[in-house]
Image 1 (cartoon, rainbow, N blue to C red):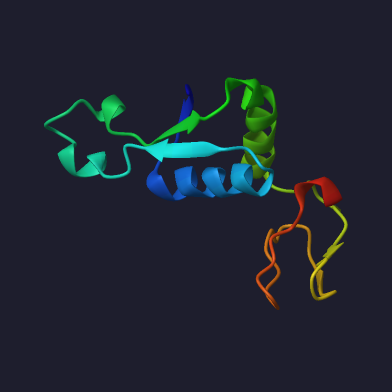
Image 2 (cartoon, one colour):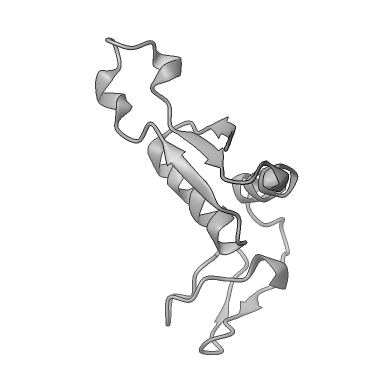
Length: 107
C-alpha cells in the first residue's frame, strides 16, 4: 500500500475514494475518526488519508482527483446515463433518475 495524499476533510476524502472506485482504483480512507483527537494529537496527524492498494495506480489516481477537485470546464457537454438514458448536466456524476454512476471515460 502507498499513501497517496491527505484530504482536507472527511467529506472530500470520501468523495475522492468514490471517484477512484468508479474508475476501478482500489483505495482506502484512513484516519476517519481521528478528528475527535485533535488537540491530543497534532492537527496534521488527524487529517483523513487516501492510501492506494496498488502504487502503480498513482498517476491515474492523481489525475482523477485533480479533475474531481476542479469540476467540469465551462461549456462541458451533458452526458447520457447508460442505465436509464436520462440526460444530465456535466457537473453531475450520478444519475438522479436511477442512481447509476457516470463512467469517467464517457467524458
